[in-house]
Image (cartoon, rainbow, N blue to C red):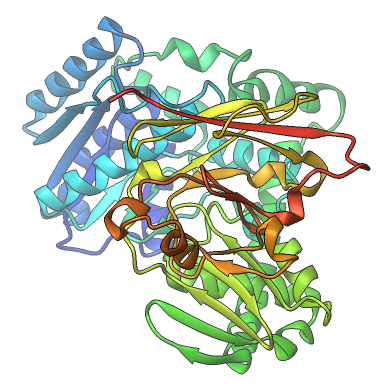
Length: 466
């Protein structure tokens, strides 16, 4: 029984589960998760699992089919006396996600549900059914995206209270286990859609092509790469922690100050990692911090003539500000609702849900023709990081009228006689360098059009009627 033997070994080798702990298994109803739940139930006494639970999230993406899967999971658990939490997403939860971002939005919703369900059930561990095949696909995807060592580690055996007991089990072993135990898992037809989903395309097309015509042992090679990357990454992380201690001048739960000169004298690899590690300590994660933004910030910090520079990380937000000899990292004091930081693609639109604002971005040759339309120099804007949010304490802008001098947005609002309680409802269009347009008030001089402008960025804002 290869699956059970591998599961036992993985739990023991990586200390994923200790006697007396309770476990909640995330169960979609597919082969992987159904095998995981069945195996944990079978081994509950041997592993000394105090309580075993299950959790299923119905994303509602496939109508009656999704509902049938939820009913199947509920029945499977009921037959075995396993308490099961089932939740159905509201139609609006995934409605705002683009087709390319749908999987990420669904994943975030799933993990949010799992953590809530585990807290309600008082489960010590959340077990997900990622397999060795998932690990191989993840590593290959990250190679194609140019990931660093941390990304090449792939899927961790454990992250916080989440464990992955099947990570060394192959998909073929899962199918064999299902057949051996007469399990009848549900099959998600979207797993065969290689047109819309990159992971499916890699699993169904790229990996078989590599195995057949380039490297028959590509799966084993990718797993070796992951193990080597993990060893190297562990060493560099230990060196980074030591280096970060040497450049920090002040540390609190919500605020870290770094010495600019000391940071920029570190080896380039340690500079990037130290900045990421500091941000991770404030945000409790380094996920969604784009490498391009880190590189741009460090490039600015390395040039002595650059006196100031700033970026705001995606949710959870964190300010990263270059100010003279100091690099200031902080968690904003203001609470920013989820709708107040939205990516703005070009061309594209996004909704800023304060007073019903919709912001549109497109390349154009038109001139400004309204109060809520601005034309900027597209080559002076970091289009990849363009987003819309509420203003943050410390935000500054260099309006055209001030000849390059910056001004606090709070002062800008005061001059415009905008009450405190209304300021959070004004959309701020910003990129990795900070605010570009305070809607209805000012644009940043760095992006204004000139006689040499060749590409024009048209930003428009409209507010829903009251």
